[in-house]
Image (cartoon, rainbow, N blue to C red; front, side, top):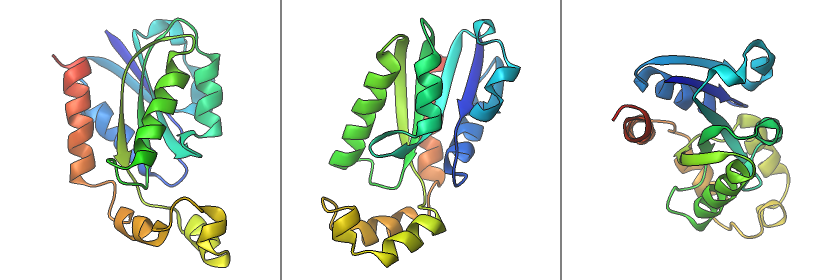
Amino acid sequence: MKTLIIYSSQTGNTKMVCEKAYEYINGEKMIIPVKEKDIVNLDEFDNIIVGTWIDKANANTEAKKFINTLSNKKIYFIGSLAASLTSEHAKKCFNNLTKLCSKKNNFIDGVLTRGKVSKDLQEKFTKFPLNIIHKFVPNMKEIILEADSHPNETDFLLIKNFIDKNFNS
């Protein structure tokens, strides 16, 4: 089986967890940023793992556009977000990604990991009252601080378990 990991990463979090996934996969594999999608023939791959950072509780625009070009593929996702993985937001993100990946494809499984918030976005948050930007997330400052140490070994273990379960059994 040949596996492609194709990712979109804004701050490096998604790239980092996708590189870990790549390390853990046994067998033929390739990893590329979604910007380089045209260098591969997607039909050569049995599995496609799409790595995405979370934007508005779903895949970021670049990853979403790529997923929407796929049809009849066996796909998986790896998503990175700042929020706690046990939060309602994370559950909503997982469900939205599952729905997106299932539209025209054979969606198998997905995993979410945490990642730090970019300095640019943190700066934007300081310029506006948080209740305007994220009125439903009153603890945004705490989430940002807590996410600052991610991705970390806990996230990498989630990736390892995801890969072992779906690719190395």
